[in-house]
Image (tube, rainbow, N blue to C red; front, side, top):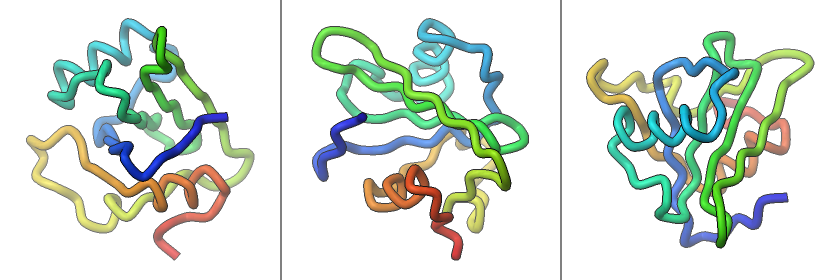
Length: 110
């Protein structure tokens, strides 16, 4: 499991992501689309168009790691869905608490 610490920042890609993307594709999205450094130790969250699949990418001491979760029912909803940002903005930041709720199966919109 991912060791979440309060020092970590969590960046959500607001653009739907093709879940066939692996390390190189997600790394490129974090760098070019989200304008963040994937080697920073922070978490990068990607969702598919239907919002029922989620990938987390992070630097894990000696290499990149990807964590993948698929929901059997419903989708992954975040507070960033309530307040759509400027269409030019390709990422949003959420808290570790919001991510923990999300991964635990609790939507942060409730």
